[in-house]
Length: 67
Image (cartoon, rainbow, N blue to C red; front, side, top):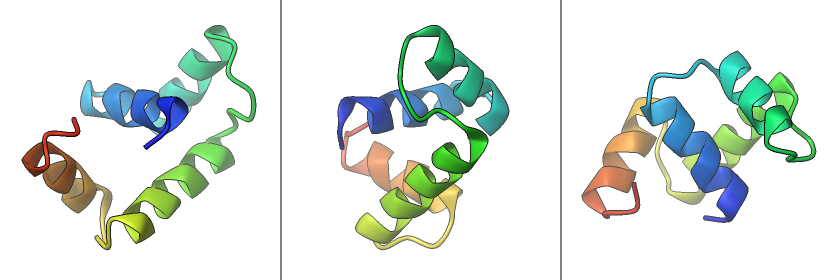
């Protein structure tokens, strides 16, 4: 997981909405921070870790001590 992906997952884990994550990334100077980009990034991570939902993704990452 790269730095941007980790930042997105961490913010979501803290309770941010996807829209709020997008706004926070923009404030911190990240490029490609649209809501659509956040959704695609999460889809990519779900596929990469072979899980179906974002909740499963968080459980997986916690179990693997990646979050």
